[in-house]
Image: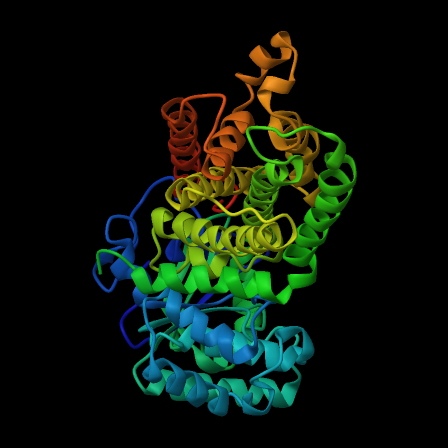
Length: 215
Length: 255
């Protein structure tokens, strides 16, 4: 599987098909048994430091540090990437503003809503200015209005040159946002093609998806 | 980037913030417990005990109590922080960042060391104010304190990685560390024990830590410092190597 720079790529599959395992292997949360993964040319095992600097991960589960305020969640994450100083503080404030979290900057994450947590996940993934954003169910548990707002935001980020790798169970989300889609079944990619070729005129992604995953 | 010093410092700072956020759970209890030990064992009962290693029993007690709390705090900080990070999944913030196993382990160890130094410093002040004792040899005081804290922090990392539930973290404390600390010379000098027990002390690693540390206060020890400090250093290297290896392999961190 190959994702081009600047692409909005959808990665779909049923529960247990291997989506999160693939993401974990890319970001270094899983030890892979074979194969290689290159991130903008860097091998994610041999050149892991360089490769990781390019990736921002917004996981499905909320996994924030409960001892830090929302603003510090961003600043400390930047610190783990080797970044510090006023530029980081400015970047954190800019992201809080962009994701509508400025008013909640000093509180702990346990005191914000599900939608705000989802936005914080995205802000944290972007704090170190990655070139590849990996989104694992970015709109899970978010209401329709906020989902549309997030879609707009993701489109803007992609238009600004950010490569986005999206996994989602909301097939209309993938159809709406992704230029290319790959579908995984039992750990194997069964199709990888442009969305418009995968979903022909008059068809819906949902029908194509079900046909493919049912084999 | 060959070495992520900013990342290491950020993790150390995070550990310190964690300690300060739960100050009533991790800083004040050892101080209060020490106060009680000093009043009850040191002043009330200790006044009936003759001088030990050339100092009053209360003065003799202080270095032992510092070691007791430094050991407990170092192990507790690393084990619970790592386990909590695994349990709440926020340890993934570190695992996806460009941080090596060495930087992650060092960050946790330094955070834990800082907490141990704060607690040791406060007990040292208590010792100076209440029983008028201060270390005579600050170099040994600091050196042994750092070694012991690193040793038990590394042990904390190992058990923080292995534990499946919070209950598992307490197993080592309840059944190994606390009993060995209490019989390892916190309240007694080796010379006060019968010869058979004195020999048994030589297989208790905590005895070496207390014996070496007390020397910084009393100027006397049961073992020559080269043996006690040597033993602590060897144990320190072994536990650190295991903690580093486990972190690098991603034991219970990576699937």
